[in-house]
Length: 152
Image (cartoon, rainbow, N blue to C red):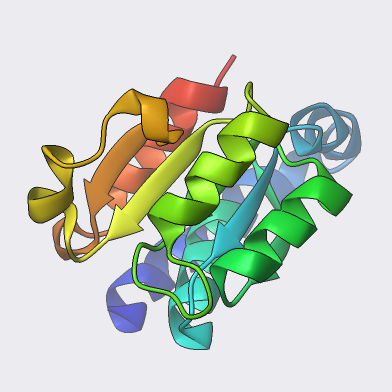
């Protein structure tokens, strides 16, 4: 997976480097759109962060390794969107999404999980989950979802 993304990441800086004088203003505008990534796997968080920051105009403002930490960091960092895994220690992603819905009702939560098919019928929007996506489908649907939810 990282090897297939590497050429894309190598191309992204080349396409933006000629317009460096303009880039900081554009980046500042978009960096106002921030994302918190919550997953118990450091590797998964790293891959998601790299994809978001390398292939979109959004900025990952923080990472969390469990549901409790995700709630704490969301309250501190006030992201525009949260990407949350389902299976995490201390508190799973669905439970954390419910808490966030009550404290940060306007922040979309994207449940990015291997258990998407099982969860689609079990989790209603009342749980605080905006969208459920399968990790098995790769990162492209996640990035498209971010553009749809946060894009201009």
